[in-house]
Image 1 (cartoon, rainbow, N blue to C red):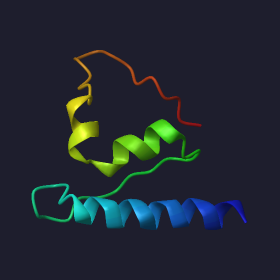
Image 2 (cartoon, rainbow, N blue to C red):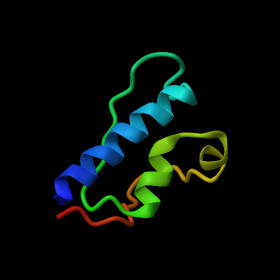
Image 3 (cartoon, helix red, strand yellow):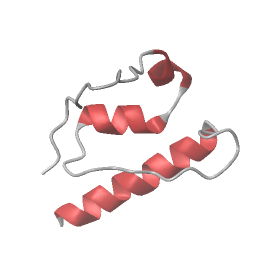
Image 4 (cartoon, rainbow, N blue to C red):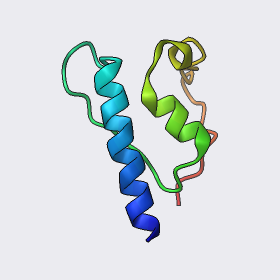
Length: 68
């Protein structure tokens, strides 16, 4: 049941990214890691508001998220 929700969120993100034309018109790979937290979902959408607050990691910095 939990995987059905995860894949539904992934499909919704694909639709939202298509609406906002994420990737400059070309198809960009959507990488959504489990657990799909609110922060991960929000930053994966790629709308203008979330793009304003995107932080690009500097060289040598590690990600805040821990992948298991």
